[in-house]
Amino acid sequence: MQYPLKTFSIAFRYYDEEKMVPLLSSIMFHNDLRKFEYKGTEEIFNKIQWPISYHIEHLTVFCDCRWRTVCSILSHLRSLRTLALKGANKYESDKFIDVHPNITQSTCLTSLSLETYTNITMNDIESLLLLLPKLTHLRLIGQDILTDPSLFDGCRWENFIKTKLTLLNRFEFWFTRYVVDNVDCTTVESLIATFRTSFWLETKHWCVKCDHISGKYRQYFYLYSIPISLDIFQYPNRYSEILHSILNTTDDNSTIVVETHALSLVLSKTVNERIQHQVNII
Image 1 (spheres, rainbow, N blue to C red):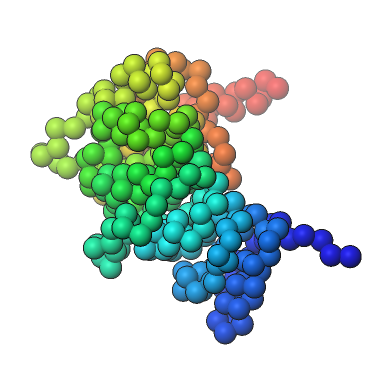
Image 2: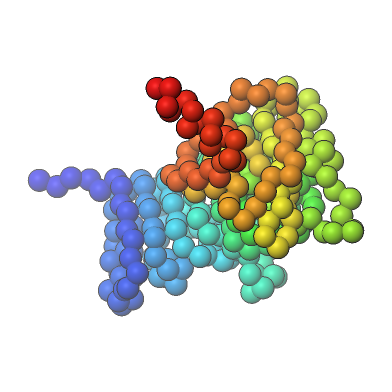
C-alpha cells in the first residue's frame, strides 16, 4: 500500500552532488507534495529540477542564498502560499539583477518571511514585494547593520503598504542601524514619530518600538515590531546597555516576545534582587 508524500524535510552538511540532485529532483515530482523544508547549500538547491505542474505550497529554505535565487523561486514555484527564507542575501554579484522582467505577479503567495545578513535597501525590498500583492503576512529580519534610512521611515512604509500591499494585516520586522557620532541628529523620538500616524495606531494597530543601544564599540538604533518574532532573542547582551527606549503607542500591556526558540535577558542588579526576594517569599 502506498501513501502520498505530502511533506518532505531534508538537512545535510556533506553530500554527493551527483546523487543528491537527482534524488531531490525526483522527490519534487511527487504530485501530492505540498510542503518542502530544505537545509543545505544554495548550489544544490539551484540544481533541483522543478516540475512544470506547480503543486508545492509551502517552502522553507535554510541556506545562504543570493537574490537571484529568490527570484528563481518565485519564477518556478507559482503555487506557493508561504515562503520562508532564512538567509536571503544581496551580494555584489546581484547588483544588476532586476526582479521584474521574467517574473509575473504571484497570485497565491500570502506569507513571506525574509531574513537577510547583508545590507539591503528599501528599493530592494519594494522591487520584490511588488510581485506579491496578495501578501497578508510579511516578516523582515535584518541581521546586519542597515544604512538605508528609508527602511526606518514609517511614512514610506505606510504609503507602500496602502498602495501595493492592501491585504497586509500582519507586519513583523527588525532593523538595526549605527548612530553616527557628531553627524547623526536622529533620535529614538524622531525615528518612532513616523510610526505614530493613524495608519499604524488605528487602522493596523501595529505596535513599534525603538531602542538606543550603547554597545561595546558602537552605538545602535534597533527598530522593531511588537510582539518580537526572532528565532533567538537576546535583550540586551552583556556588552550593551539600553540608553533610551520608546514605543509608538502608550499601551504598556502589549505582548513583547512571541515565536522565539531561545530567550536571553540581561537583568540589572536591582531586578535580580527583586526576583530573588520574590523567590524567597515563595
